Image 1 (cartoon, rainbow, N blue to C red):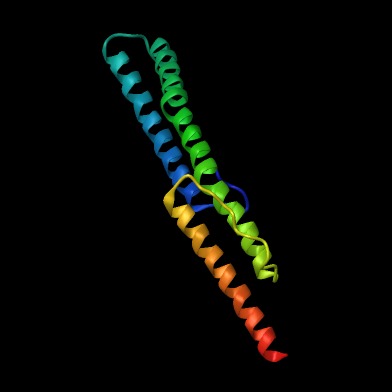
Image 2 (spheres, helix red, strand yellow; image 1 turned 180 degrees about the vertical axis):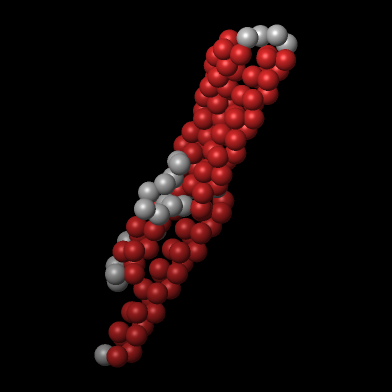
Length: 137
């Protein structure tokens, strides 16, 4: 499958796996429809097998695999990349580094709003820690 490893890297890869499996099932159906349609029209089985297989492979490559790879690339660049960058910065924050600003820019408003919310949280935490340190001294 597309996003397989020890674990799925993202829910989006699960979706792509489902689309990929559905595409393969659809391709199998198309193969049998082509094959039986040719056999019923008098084409010898060996010839029908070759044409049905060739047509199905062409269909799978052009209509299924190509778009799936394009969708995967778009998802990776527009959604997952900014989220991965944000995750790295948030991991630094969890280790106590509250001085690195979260400057992640996505192409979509949701990612930008999430990055802005995390940046506000970082600033609030930093201010709270400074107040606590000031209050302790």
